[in-house]
Amino acid sequence: MSQLSTKHLLGIKEINESDIQLILQTAANFKEVINRPIKKVPSLRDVTIANVFFENSTRTRLSFELAEKRLSADVINFSSSNSSVKKGETLVDTVNNILAMKVDMVVMRHASPGAPHFLSRNVKANIVNAGDGTHEHPTQALLDAFSMQEKLGDLAGKKIAIIGDILHSRVALSNIFCLQKLGAEVMVCGPVTLLPKYISSLGVKVELDVKKALEWCDVANVLRIQLERQQIKYFPSLREYSLYYGITKKMLDSLNKEIVLMHPGPINRGVELSSDAADSDHSIILDQVENGVAVRMAVLYLLAGSKA
Ligand code: CP
Image 1 (cartoon, rainbow, N blue to C red):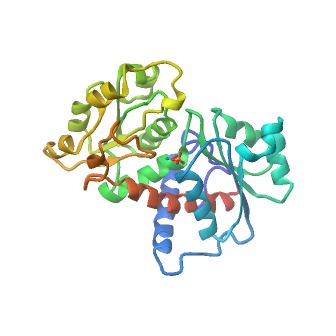
Image 2 (image 1 turned 135 degrees about the vertical axis):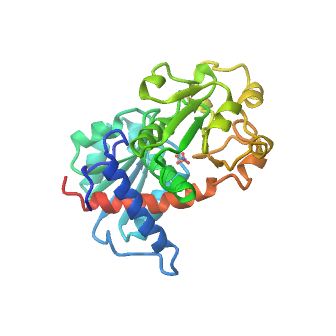
């Protein structure tokens, strides 16, 4: 199979294992390309892509833009904070006006869960979800899976613990769907107030003790405490969270095994991860960022060629 089953990437829930494997294999080819002295290929020379961001981003926005430029696409960037959205323009009107400038694909980050799904039903362009509220962040899960495979090979049967603020995380849900489709065992770990009530219905193990989670897993994917989404107090203080759930290099070194440490960024240093853990030999956090460009190149390239 050399084509995706879809013309949009809305979430990992909507794609199948073959789609995921195709994206990961294509990303491996692009990773080889972007490590050459000449990093650019002409694959999307006649394609125009709009990066439409209604929420802040460092990694995802820059990584998509670089991926698009490495593929020779024409790129425009939209940020809601200095746009006519501030004058009351709707999402569909905003995107249709961008598309009127002959844009083929829209990469969108939005605070509302389901916003990319809504857009895909109302505009004529390929839509890529770059994070929709607390729902999904599919390219993050794909780059996470790619990075895990680089360290561990086939993920079938591997044990992945997702640790931290699961309740407010779009990375958690996309990772759970992606890893399960690849045959991995998934555990979530965090204080009970930061675990959604429905979580065990997704077929994941649930653990409240971070030390037990670290002893169980091959990979610890640690998530940020998302204070900006927390309207009430879910734990007494950041100091207490760090005391019970913060991961240090000493904890990782004391395990009687190899463990891979991941984090999607941005990190709250000294809260979910100590600086010495984040910067340790266990960590592949910057490899994740590097791999993001190749994975996003693969997604854009395959969607541009999709006949779905
Ligand atoms: N991991 C991630 O989505 O980071 P940004 O919010 O900086 O894009």
